Every structure is written in structure tokens, then in C-alpha cells.
Image: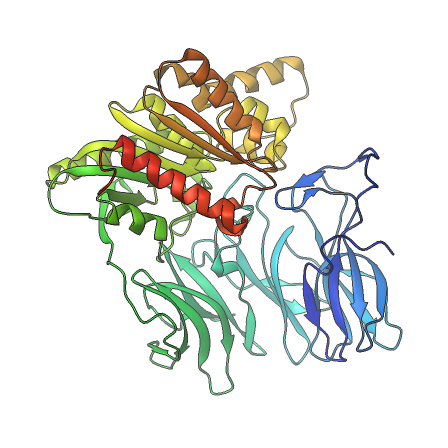
Length: 536
């Protein structure tokens, strides 16, 4: 057996004492070519995929046994069965079949795979003590936002949805790569009732799900994560509020959160909250940290996705800018998840267009309440980088832009991103991402280019800082380089490109400490300098 550089990326303890996990295939020897005949052939944060993941079992003596292809193993409580994902040899990113197999710990070995009738994208699996099986999954296609659903059944029978897309929206877009807190928790409260987490707006709250419906276990404003049920009916979890970092809490029968720890004995400033009228009159949540009264330099912070959302937690970068004397404004425009299916799907085929109008409305609203942006900057990562580039080419009188790991060219993104061949065409608005003729391709390329912020780069007149990791497979470094090259070639404005060696798309959360520190320092310095508050 060849074990990858990261042994057991996902581990689960079986009831028999075995540790079951996933390992990756070992890369070829140095200097050997990379060879593949599959899609996807790379994944952000992992790099090139050198072969299918494999399951391994580790016993108490440390002996390792190869159990064959598979990933994300979840043993039943008695350790006699194993649910895991199996590769269906599909072109779809993250496509996988859920299978259940008998697990013989004496071997250890697995029996024949019994494929479950479940959605394609499975994010979380749980077993009950009585042997029932549950999961959170979606039948949505990559690039189209679809609500996740909770399914319940047996290991040998059909899994039935307990929730509809209008009733429950746990987590971010099921086709997205970002694991929001709402997608990490699924547990049995009893044989017929499940504990899950529900994302509404920016809050993530515990809920009980059964065939009779959804019952909210708390309405505390914040982000609940790592929730586990207790025998007395309480729920223990980690809770982060907009003003207070994470603490361990107990949700009682009344839904109130009683803090069990005081690891962070301080509070941060409460963000202001207001709404503006967005696409088709929908209310768009807007949040702000005010650095002082009256008009001030302002930064628009834009989230990624586009089918993601700003959660009701703490964004330290926002507080650092506020402390420097800059107002920071962030929002969940059309396309954001956690509101309604229509709200998220309306952006498909209209990237940049609808949310540009909403950011313009936000700018006007600030002026109407006496908080006009005396100087305005835009700042975002991933789709936030896309939207920052879009606004830099469309909004008037911008003073600065910080663009991290962006999408700027929808045409080249299609073939260079690990998800581009499905996510990008569908996000642009194609019904089928695989054109059959040259004429089909020409039509789609034209539409993709019209929807690319690089198209309006001649209109970018503000100082621009571009940051990216050189191992970013989600929004490849070439996207940032295309923007930098064209802007720098004009030689009209200050433009800088920063490439972080060895970093993926997830640099802000999982990058090396020195990379994250450098990114924060450069961003703060760029914005304070060009907004005229340096040294304050």
C-alpha cells in the first residue's frame, strides 16, 4: 500500500477499537510525469490527484490494513458496518456514491458495497445506536445553488428527505467547496429525530429535524458549530457571537445559551445592521463597523462564493480597519445563501450585474444617513475578488482596491480551475456546460467574456493590490496574473502583485502563519495609505 503525505485525512473510531481513515495515493517520484485520465484531476488544497482515495484501518497495535478505494468513512456505533463515499467515475466535481459495507474487525476487511439511494453530493453522515442512517446532501449541480436536505432511512433501504428546500437551508450552497458550520453537524437525538444546524441570514442555529417537521432549539444570534446532543435533552456546542469569540455553551430546553467557558473574556464592537432594497425588492442585509461619526473613508468588504454569506461572527480584519479609522461595510447581496432558494439562484447568469446595483444602493444609503464615504475602497477574495474587480471597473471615484485570489476571466477560468468546467459555465448561465459544436462554443465564450470583469480593466483607475497563492487551484494564479499584466502594462496607476509560495485558495484560513500575517499587513497598509488614514 502506498500512503500519501497526509495519512488519514479523515478518521473515524469504530466501536471495535479500529481507527478507520482515508489516505491519498503517493505522488510519483521526483522528475516523473503526472499522468491522469480523469476529471477532476486536481483539487484546491490538495493539488493534483494522483489516484483515488483509499480506506485504511489501524488497530490498537498500529498495524495498517488497506480496505480498498473510498473516502469519508463513518462506522456504525457497534463497529460492524461502515458508510463511506465511493467514486462513481463521474465528471462532476465532488460527485460520489454513498455505500454501506459490513466491517469485519477480526480481519479487518469490508464486505460487498451496498449503494444507497441518496443525493449525489453528501456532506455529512450519521448513524443512530439502533442502526438507522442519516445524511445531509443535495441533488443540486455544481454551480447552481440548491438547498441541502436532511435524509433519514436504514442502511439497506431508501433514504427519505425530512426537509424541503423552502423549509430548511442548512449550510452554504451544497455544491460549494466551503464547509460552513451548518454542514459539519448531524447527530441523532433519538431514533426518529436528528440534530442539525440551520443557516438563516448570517446566523447558524441548532434545530431538531424529524418527519413531523423542524423544531428550533435556539434562536441565539451567532454561529453555532460542533453541536452534540446530551442524554438530558440539552445540546452542547461552540458558539461565536458578533461581539464575542467562541465559547462552549449549553442550549437548554428554553433555547437560551449558558456559557460553560470564559476563554475569551472580552467583547468587540457591535456591528450596525440595516437593510436596503435589492433585486426585485428583496431585503439585503448590510452590516457596518463605524470608526466614528459622520462621513469617513470606507471599505466595502465582499464575500466569496458567490453562493456564500457573511456569518454572524467576528471578522478581525474588519475590526483592524475600524481601529485604523476606516468604516467597514459588508453585505449579503443577491446570490447569498441562507435566505431563500430564489434569492440565491437569481444571480445565476448575472454575476456582477445585480450585486453592482445593490452596492450602489448601499453607497447612496450611507450618504443619506450622514455617513458618506469620503474615499471608497473595495476588498474581497474569490468571488469577492471577482466583484472587487467588477466594481473597480464600474464604480466611479474609487480610491483603492484589494483583490485576492480573484476570478477575472470567465473564459480561461473554465479550463484552468479545478471546478471551472462545471461551476463557471453554470454560474454564467449555461444549461449544459459541455458544448457540442464550434458555434455553441463561440456563443458561450462571448457570453463568458461579457460577464468577465477583466473586460472592463481599461476603466480601472484606482491603486490596486492583487494577492494570490501560487498553488491556488480554485482561482488559479493565472487569473491574478492576467489582471496584473494588463493593468501594469498600461502604467497609469499603482499596481502590485503578491504571490505566496505554496499557498492554496484557502490562504486566509489555512495558510502558513507568516503568509496570513503578511496578507493582513499588506492589506491594511494598502487601504490605510490610499484612503488617507496611514499613521492613525
